[in-house]
Amino acid sequence: MTLECVNLSCGYGRTNSKNGRKQIVVQDVSFSLDEGEVVCLFGPNGAGKTTFFRTLLGFIKPLDGKVFIDGTDVAQMKPSKLATRIAYVPQFANVPFPFSVEEVVLMGRGVHVNSMLGPSPLDCEKAQECMASLGISHLAKKVYSRLSGGERQMVLIARALTQDARYLVLDEPTSNLDFGNRIRILERILELKERGIGIIMTTHSPDQVLQLGTRVVVFNRGAMTRTGCPQTVVTSSLMRNVYGVDVVVKEMHNNIDSPVSVCVPCLRHPSQNMSSIKEKAV
Amino acid sequence: MSTQFLNAASQPGFFRRLAKSSAFYFALLLITVLVSFTTGRYGVSVEQLFTLLWLKVARLPLNDFATVNTVIFNVRLPRILAAAMTGSALSLSGAIYQSIFRNPMVSPGILGVSSGAGFGAALGILLSMNLAGVQLMAFGFGSVAVSITCLFGRALKRDSDSVIMLILVGMVVSTVFASFISLTKYVADPTDKLPAITFWLMGSLASVNMDDVRSVALPIALGSVPLFLVRWKLNILSFGDDEARSLGVNTGPLRLMIIVCSTVITAAAISISGIIGWVGLIIPHICRMITGPDHKTLVPFSMLTGAIYLMIVDDIARSSVSVEIPLGIITALIGAPFFLYLIFCKQRSCR
Image (tube, rainbow over all chains, first blue to last red; front, side, top):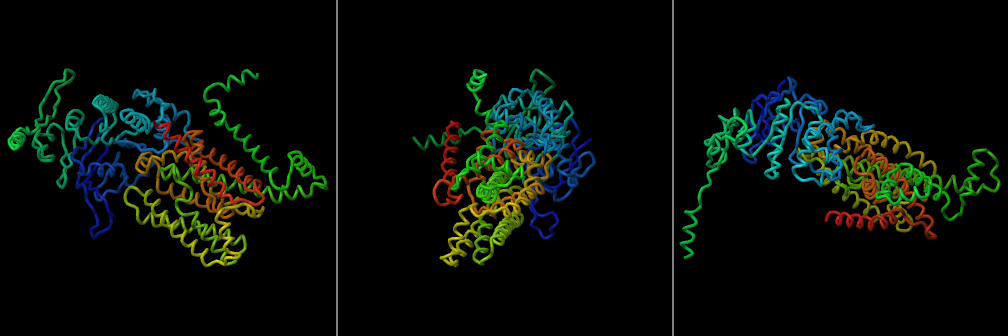
């Protein structure tokens, strides 16, 4: 029961055209994801995180290499089959119509619902169950597009859970959220991991990689990706290399569990520049 | 009993619940049909109508009712059926296009079917074809315009937003066919053909007969059934391609099927009615406000409301003044201010 990437290269353009016109964004990535693991996709903007997971989800065809889910090639799977294996939680869903939360969550049952009769009582039960497990049952009748960012994210996760998929792809689940909601979403993700769901998430925070990730894929513009255990991969030299900033990675105790690593940026003090400006002003 | 009713009426949302109940809608449909049969320049009372029906059912001699019989069955019945079919076809494809193009401001003509059909009809009139020929031309060119849009949209689409490409190409194709219409009008004989073209483009059901109704009933039924069957999936499609795919919908083939069916029903409706704007835009909008955005209920309600609306509009067209008013003019005169009102309401609720 694993999700496997084998020498995956992705990007845009025709896969079969020989004379160029291909725009390779990410090259030669291999990793595997077992159930109950969290793989973090980490790296600067424009390094190909989005392209990569869109390839994983079968939205775009891989330029080279393959993705296997439980031994089956994703490229050979129909969307209806794929949706029962891997679910997707977008950063935000843009709907032009005022669907209720309940309706949005029920759409996760898309594969199972008879489109003539609409969702069955069984589907509704499943949706209720998923909302309850995330503690958002009270939102059921509210209009999705009028919810706050954190609530919307929860609804999208609930929708993905109703798909009964063993793997979940989350696109920057904590972006645009305030500090509290960010932590709450991370706790939910940990909970899902405990339930045995394999999780792939993109993130901009090295702390999240260090605390949640069982494995990390670091994307770097124009360079090879690095894959491995967060504790060994995310170091100050890597951060220097990828982002061009200085950080210190330290182990810390948060009074709950085993020590965790945190990444603290070293902000360059602007006093030197400031004083020169002041001198000029005087 | 009466106090109970009053209590129910004083509860908040009573009218909303009333408007949602299907019994209310069918009653409204029935009343509209009755009114439509009885309004017009030749006055027919409800009593006469029922007597006539009784005579027909009982197969008794018509005697004095011969004229009423002609008016009801040869003139009004085809008009009422055509109005109902056209109204529901336009509203159905409007509701569906709004969901697959993820935009509540989209109308059935977005991919060029109206201007294509308009050109087909204008060309047919220019070439002195008979009525059936003109209808066939309208249907054919409507379909051709949409096919061109889809082919170019497919060729130009990038990896993600094929929907935006379709809308852009649709605008281009509409514009091209609109100028073709102008060209045919420019070269048309101004004494007889030009007025005929102009009148056709404004939409009318004045010359509809039973044969027309029969010939478009089949394509409209054939196109509506598949759309009706996949209507719940439209909810998922309105979230966009990527998400719909991840939710297990094979978006490409489904969207193509939807566009083909919508084009067939719209082109068929336009071929007998001429171009009637605003129906496919306004009706789904109103229905969405009443029933909510779930397409499982929205689609049938839109069809029913569209049918009722266009029957009423046709009644106005043939009875308000001594000459027929083209339908397109009335729907625009009702639709445009109403649309402004909707936007106004939305603005206020947002605040």
